[in-house]
Length: 304
Image (cartoon, rainbow, N blue to C red; front, top):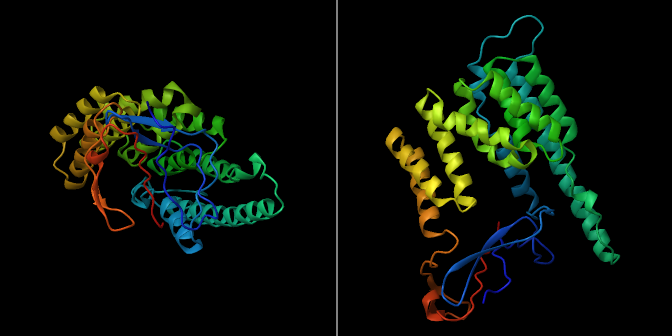
């Protein structure tokens, strides 16, 4: 017997604590074995305090290293400075997303007060204009490393722009597979697997198996291992992580590999839940093993 539960982040700013579609988690069965449960795919945004939300948006958007752009071939003629162009795009996107989230929260609050349901379309972020701009910049710097961050922007931020995502993956595969810059965006390839289809997975595997730069290859192997781990392909994930630990001596990359290996081997669906001990809200000490043989739902929450 398995409870129909879900492990979700708990948002202190939310007026109610709802099941957020698209999330997934684990619940323990009577035998102590982990089972994965998940929710539908359309996701209302997680509510966060305004300052933190804006800070997170900025951190996400500027995470593509600008060094990739700065180190690219020098631009000539009428071409823009690629670094300045990317920063301008990221800044305008961050501002637009913050404004959209504020407007959405106001709409949700108004609809709840009226006893109405917020239409599904309201949850779609206005990404189209920015994806188009990124595509224009990628074409402007076609064939150069400076194009890669803009292609990564498309992969990371596209919401409904399927054709743009497919084009970005195709362009990366045809023009940038040997570029060192591609190592900074390989983490986005699993994210777009549904929109881009097999070409995204093929590109990731090509980089992971064949790239001549060890660091780029390691980043791709880590991305593929995480993808396989999430898809319950533990053996493939472990194999990739073992290669990572053979190829690199970088402390940060090794730490990522060890963390991913622990998740794959100890938290995989079907494994026995690890011991958890602590103190409950009444100050009483407890251990997860105390409830062996009973149905247990673990709810991970916090104040973000």
